[in-house]
Amino acid sequence: MLHASVAKRDYYEVLGVPREAPPDDLKRAYRRLARELHPDRNPDNPAAEEAFKEASEAYRVLSDSEQRRRYDRMGHAAFNGEGSGSFDPADLGGLGEILDGLFGEVFGGRRRRRSGRDLTYELELTFEEAALGVTKHIEIERPAPCKTCKGSGAAPGTKVSECPVCKGRGEVRSQRGFLGGYRICTACNGTGTKIHVPCPDCDGRGFNTVRDRMEIRLPPGVEDGAVRTLRGAGEATSTGSGDLHVTVRVAPHELFERVGADVRCTVPVSFPQAVLGATLEVPTLEAKVQMKLPPGTQSGKVFRLRGKGIPVYGGMGKGDQLVTIIVEVPAKVTRQQRKLIEELAAELGEDSMPQQASFLDKLKRLFD
Ligand SMILES: [Zn+2]
Ligand SMILES: [Zn+2]
Image (cartoon, protein in one colour):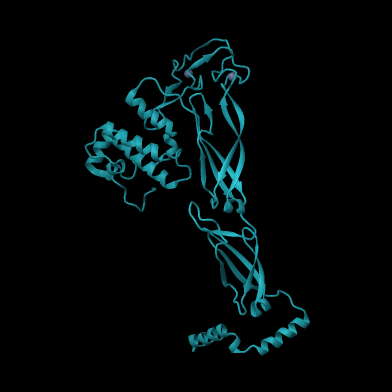
């Protein structure tokens, strides 16, 4: 059960209708929610998908007069966790199919031809491109109506007649999902026509794959997983084009890590540098900068370089760069180095290591 730990919401509340709502009102309410929440419209949005499943389940129960009566009498208990359970939204079909199913019952008759499908594209950016903004040119392959036959699939000047399977409607009744609904006629691929001589340029399909070059501007601060939608850049058909959804992938960086608008980086320093202080060369997004390391810097200390981070998305100002200092200890020492370090150790008393002195003190108290 998906909602095991959450109390199930009332179905009428989910659809936003009163308990006495007539079937047409339920349908209208569900259609509005499906338009808003369907995964086709909300790629990678689990919250919308959950809400869509919830609305679909509510509609499935309330649109069935027998199930609705049972629900009105007993609430969710009527189904005992089964029957009204969750299901995969893929079972419901695409948004177009759902809306068509609902429209079909309302208006009957001839159906709308489907317009172009949405397409997706993954765009990889470097860390710097994402941080500073970039304009990219991408090439996509997408189906577009064949120019020779203008999308009909028939060789120019040859006969085209009505598809005998769907009687020219392009779709046939299907029992898929709870709506019944319609599906595209496979005999004519939804065109509603029968072709006698296929167009030589598209083999009768009515469309060809074209390569298109598009420009996409990404503002500074775009994040990994962000989706930009190019309207009309999806599959093109004679009745309209779908959209192209571009998902941004930001490659990891060797030195930088992003935390909101801040950039984190770790700089190793030697023990003498940490003790005596030093001037360090630190990489930032746009250039190398010099940073003063004060004497006596502890390992793990974080310094903030103001305004050296990522521009705040859609706003003014910039994040900072956070520089974490790590004191690197020699992994191997020569005999001479060992001697010097031993001399140094003998020389370093409690006064020079207050943290250690306090720790040893606490440790002693803990077991005495
Ligand atoms: Zn053609
Ligand atoms: Zn057909």
